[in-house]
Length: 334
Ligand SMILES: NC(=O)c1ccc[n+]([C@@H]2O[C@H](COP(=O)([O-])OP(=O)(O)OC[C@H]3O[C@@H](n4cnc5c(N)ncnc54)[C@H](O)[C@@H]3O)[C@@H](O)[C@H]2O)c1
Ligand SMILES: O=P(O)(O)OC[C@H](O)CO
Image 1 (cartoon, rainbow, N blue to C red):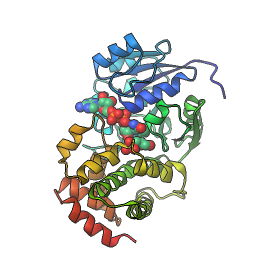
Image 2 (image 1 turned 135 degrees about the vertical axis):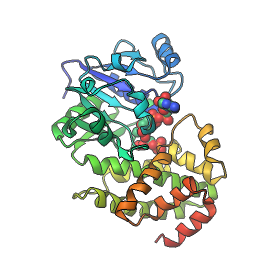
Image 3 (image 1 turned 180 degrees about the vertical axis):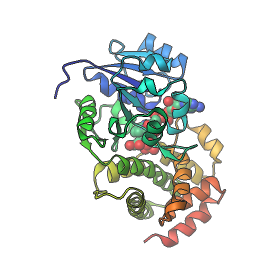
Image 4 (image 1 turned 180 degrees about the horizontal axis):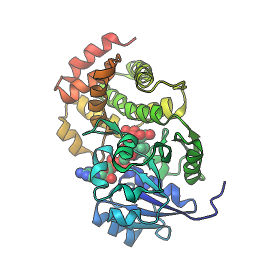
């Protein structure tokens, strides 16, 4: 359906995904107030129509997109807010806002991570801190790398909300020449799966870095799908088909694509980089680094069998040697 009324939307985040989403939204009748943390990036976009730090080839339509570094100002008069910063920085990004600033807005999380200090999904955290009712929240999921959006490669998004009419409204903002978007209702299942695929991508990267091959990775990814199913079904039981693209598809793109931040970070760890040096090597954030701690800790209550998550946790948080942790893991995969 074509959008006849211009939609007013706030984009929160200055990274690759926010930049790609701004590009997609500019294909439609959406006017965007784009909040970025770095004043120098905002100024560069205003002057030259490009984000100098991420996806700098993407042309920003500055008639439709107004950049801004004051979060309160960016929230004024918008109908939708899309959150697209790494989960570890969400609290910083929204500092200064009160529940009133969210009144009446549809809040969309494009984040695939856990809020580390709270061990919470982003939708739960936002709902708790800003009194946003669950039915006004949705998430953007699906196998979609910002770098391919920049190149206008055909991509698919899944929009999940408890309110499927709302999911359809959000999907409608994002459908364009090169993006299809499908509304669904499994918001928690999809949010947890999106968080967990990042942990699996770390494991894929680590084993790549250690010299394991395609045969092993295929087994790792198949076992990972079962691990994700066990965890998601335990934490949020619901009939769901995990072979769909928001679950299996997202796992595959992250596990196999050279664009993947999590796989790249894992590969550096497998090659012997320290966590600090791997982080310094990348201008981008690997959400899985934070997520593995949250999921590991949450699972202490559930006791789900999660050997891949445990191996990654031990490497990143208990200083286990990657070789030894993967030697243990390889014995339990089937
Ligand atoms: N990049 C993708 O292809 C893609 C696709 C789907 C979902 N996502 C999700 O989108 C979210 C944002 O990821 P991204 O890929 O745009 O990030 P990115 O790695 O490209 O960019 C890093 C972002 O973190 C911000 N940042 C870095 N250090 C910070 C600090 N100390 N305080 C506050 N902010 C800081 C930067 O300003 C920038 O916005 C993540 O949850 C990611 O999983 C990304
Ligand atoms: O593949 P990553 O680690 O860059 O994560 C990005 C997105 O979640 C892919 O859908």
